[in-house]
Image (cartoon, rainbow, N blue to C red; front, side, top):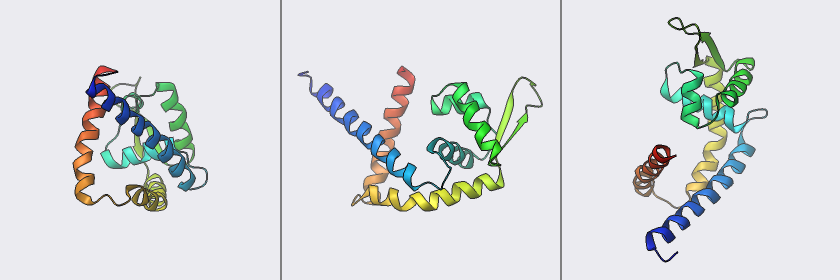
Length: 147
């Protein structure tokens, strides 16, 4: 590995993987009792997009199997956090939307993990965070295209 871009890429992705593990651990501990990181992630996504999504759309967004999404959605529906209905145009599909109690649960969870995320950002300023976001999005997009 004498290629500088290869060396830097390995170092960068090693840091990202270590960061991922630490964040998952810290965030999971900060979530309300009974809420898993996968639950929060889906609720946060649905709150952010603000429209119905199919389970297949969600599976693609989170890069997981339809079975994994179906399992998580079943738990969220049982908790009253999402509403799942048949697609009126195609009976084979379903539509998922966050419920008012799901939005409240997401907001409560966000309030609990917000300080953890702020602490994780450390001394990075607003401009540093604004500058790194497009780079991380580009990395994610490149991996998704070539994955």
